[in-house]
Length: 153
Image (cartoon, rainbow, N blue to C red; front, side, top):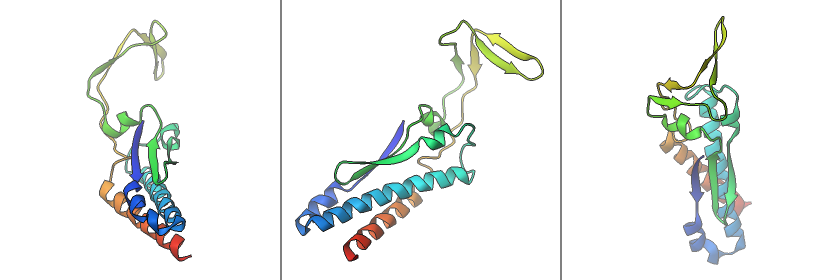
């Protein structure tokens, strides 16, 4: 799993004395920032700037959730997300987990069986932390906008 936290606990401590409406506004801002960051990740993938989705599992695992009073977490739940984001060192050996051999599809010949395979490694295809500074700016803008909307109206 990969995750990043949008945390405004310190901001909340400063504004708590201004009343519950301001506390709600800060919380709404944090949730808005997390949602914006998540949208940016999905847009990055949809625009073809990272990996090409095969099954959709990784992209579907990217989401956010509130945590605490003024915190939200954006995450990629798929087990293999870090390997796509950061790549792998190569080469490495793949062995079967539950069987005696790996079944590998071969074009025009069906399948071949191997006790192990040497994989050359995977190059990084950043999607989660790619364009981080711009995403952070957009998330902060969403945070500010949500707070102002909540206070004003």
